[in-house]
Image (cartoon, rainbow, N blue to C red; front, side):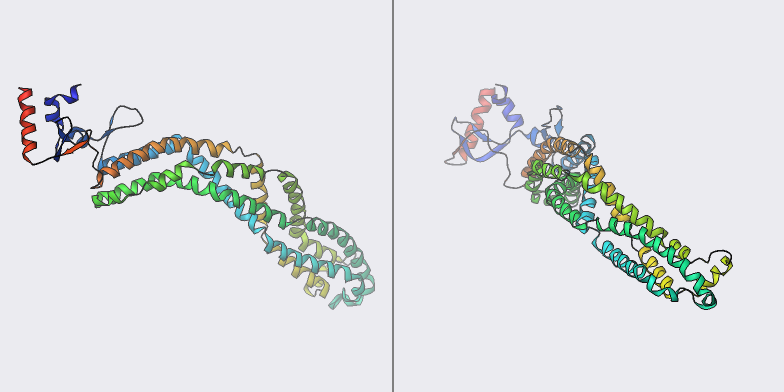
Length: 380
């Protein structure tokens, strides 16, 4: 073959002092041309892969292209959303529910004891009309209490513990999914950082460790974790929809509570003009009801609604929207990392490419000269 002809060997191979081949030829390193220009791209595009810092930068650009081609960005957005839902579920909105529970308890006690405190309904200027005014307020408060009991039952059906249990199961699944997807997403920037550091100090290239990159691209446990996340969807609709209906009832009552309590203490005709005096000099019952209404309005239920809507989206989520992009990117990136591994190996002093022949120890340095002269004579 052409690569064993003396003329080609002399032009393209570098002498490796210290030994000759068993066949009597000199021991040679890999072709000078290949060392200078780089190795061929493993992806079969027929071009030469640059070496050194330039080669690493080239690989970083290719990884960025692979990231777009595989649609890993879409998978990353889904994973970020799942992480948010997991955190909201783990929280269970326990603090908000506890605050509302205290308000509900106070309202129940006030409304339940209202018939026993009718003498206190009329204060200030309305005290003279107490016998006429108090019974009318009592009737309104009883009706309001009946409405409140339905809200109280709806609130009791909201179970934060079930959402916390769901959050723990999601957390176990996301322990593998999130690091893999985020790690793959950051891989182009990671390789770009390696190139930037090597551009400043080229000797840092030999210290690059590609083992973690290869392990990341293997995606160990990804399939099982996605299956576990799929299992979290079972029975989710039966949990989310009733909770959302009950929470909406509670929120509606809370948002209207202030007006409802004030309307219960309005002065009916023909003395409706006295209503402003009632509000200026409210009874203890009205004051306590309004104070608790203000406390209820301070409770932020929006995160709970976000959790419920997000869980509805999870029910319809196709897990292939995560698995397919990650597998596609891993397949493309694995070949890039293999090339990076070769570039790093060539940058290390001990990473000299092995001889294509098995060496045989020289007796003296003169053997090199004699062998070279023999090759030159044959060529002539």
